[in-house]
Length: 138
Image 1: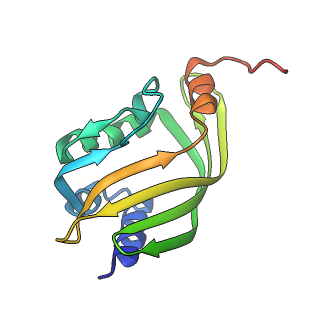
Image 2: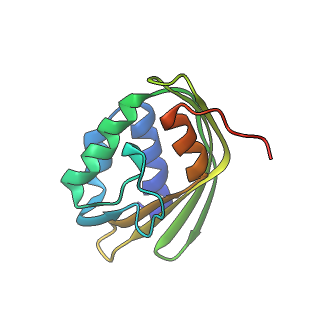
């Protein structure tokens, strides 16, 4: 299976709620949310190791998903980039998050396992939704 096919397989498993299949594609020492600049929300915190990544998926129970649509995939060697359209509501606050072209970056090691992953998203929008704040107009 190519790296691109692996990422597509991971998204298919996510759509079915099959987290063990996703974890099987991750290296034991994976860096999840590498180089993130805003670890305020529970779902966007840096994690290290496959067991810690499970906490990310548990944190997603805070959402009601309306849309999760992987639509574009780019592959170059050991890197796959996916563009995703996402719409969800933070259950605790009722605030919606809508992302067009949310970017996911997947790095693979020589064994074909994901060893680095990051969301590149509007972290401010996520923070506002998590806190339940109404954004101020500029």
